[in-house]
Amino acid sequence: MAIEIGTKFQISKEIKGYYNSARALTITNISGQTVQFILGDGKGHGSMPLQHLHYLLKRTELTQIANKRQFIQDVQTEEEIG
Image (cartoon, rainbow, N blue to C red; front, side):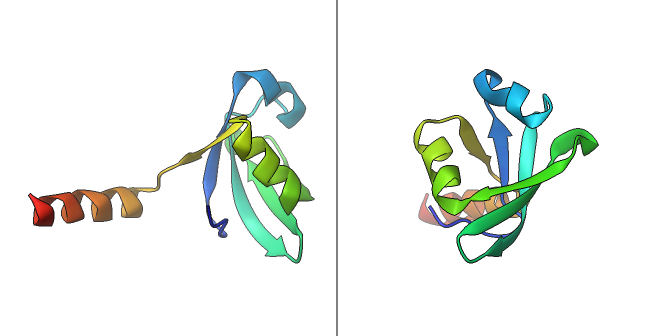
């Protein structure tokens, strides 16, 4: 999975406490091997190594939230196929 600026992730219940009880985080910057993010509901910001983000994704502690643009594109593709 490619991590891009603007990608939004839902935070699982098990690790919400580590992220000020925020429900989501959004990637704001990728610099080398570090990602910066903001937490949903204005609950703060932070950074972590890219490797740790991949670890959280692998364990399903974070789940990518599809953005509206991608959702619309997927629907249009399915209509073209069907």
